[in-house]
Image (cartoon, rainbow, N blue to C red; front, top):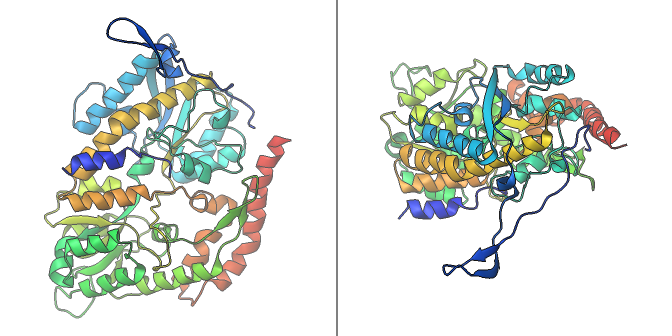
Length: 496
């Protein structure tokens, strides 16, 4: 993935349209001669960013910012003064640098949309013709629907975006796009919610050592060697159970191997971290259903083993994770899922030795770990009603560049890998999880554009005790093919 090649160097230091609205044409850079100490000039060129030639005269740049419970708006908006912890100060400094660099002033209007109202809210705003917002930040799940309707600016037409810069997650953006010639949803270091909401499995290392008989170093080496699989995961889950109150009933007083919410939404992180090939793309980049049934069946069987393990405890209350998180912090679980990097801050004060691992490989045939994220992770879009899409591209480019240089080191290097962790080997595992974050077309488009087939073909038989995915897949396949074709047709029609 095209992101943060500089982070390995930081770790070493630590461890010692086609849309209705286009943005403009490409632009170059200014390469003046270099002046030496004696006042002479050399032929060596110095590349100057085109952004440094811009001045918007203190113009207001207004962002429609989500501040839902799962958002990371604090790391985008920041405080009004350079006060607080290292992340607050870095956010403030990042924003000030961009304001001064481009001659803009940031303003925000907040929304708190539930995931299923994001699309309608964005659509209503844009179709009203209002031009208040220069950028919208909200859930990728909802914004993908509005992108298909042609209500956002195609970033590939924009004048000041430079997706070769490490501050962009270009592969992620392409993966959640439809077709080769269009990118509507922006993912980069400014849109830090995608990183903040990356799924991890938190681990109680004291239970691992005392009850399972495995050291933290042994577990981490298993992960780093690429041998962390579902079979190993299930083995440790089984060993961790203990009937704490001695009543021979598995209840909320006992200690479990795995704490989890349910067999529906909780399966998102498991299914999409596997190596199932859900789709293929034609020469124009348009998706076609090609779900690998054999591999999907293997994933189902692995998940059935884990979810029917008597050492796994479900709270069975939707995606409310408070019960399982409390149990985990009280030392009642070896592993807890439905969690992400953002939960590190909450868990770091637990009295037990806290660690984390990636979601396991299906088996040894899976080439690499895959880190997925909440389907409602928040990305950016430029509405077609934006007053000056070129200005929007310049500001967002500058925000991503400054985030890479200022915010990401504070969040990733200082907070995640030093403040929230307790040893260097945990930082290495964090790097591994981070390096394998991938955009996921099935994650973003499953519900509205694929008849739920990518997830439901596995979760439905898990819920009803089935032996395989064939029946559920056959039921969902016709609708999935139709909906995917409708999605593709929306994009093709705009090209004509």
